[in-house]
Image (tube, rainbow, N blue to C red; front, side, top):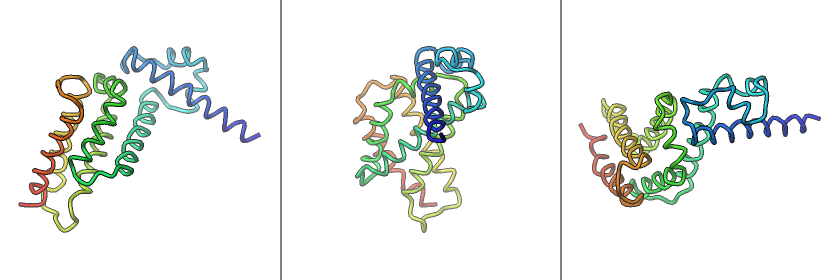
Length: 185
C-alpha cells in the first residue's frame, strides 16, 4: 500500500512541477498563482499545499534541483581548467535557456539568484588552494562570481551577440587571469 502512496506523491509532484514550468515559460513567475497552477495541473489546492507552502517554495525546490544538476554536470565533466569548466557552465545554461530566461526576467526570484551565486562561489572557491587564503578571499570570490552571473544573465537574455563557446572561453580566460588576484595580497 505504501508503494502506491509513493507513486501518487511522485505523480502529484511531477504534475505540479511540470505545470509550474509551463506557466513559468508562458506567463512568467510573477503571474503564476496557486489557484491557476492547481487548475491547470488538475489537482486540488490541498494537494498542492501537501507538497509546497507556496509558489516560492515550489520555485526553490525546482531551482535546487537545477543547481544539483549543474553541480553534477560540472563534476562529471573532464574539464581541466577554468576555460573548459566555464564552457560546461555555459552549455548547461544554453540547454535550459528558456527556463533561466524566465527566472532572470522575473522581479521575484531573489532566491534563485542567491542559490546560483552560492553555487558559483563554491566552484570558484574550490579552485583556490587551501594555503592561498587571503584576508579578503570571500569578498574576491563573490566579486568574480557576481561578474560571471552577470555575463550568464546577459547570455541567457540574448543581450550578448556571440555563440556560447566563445563567451564561455572569454569568461574562463578572465577567471584564469584573476585567479592570482584571489591568492595574492
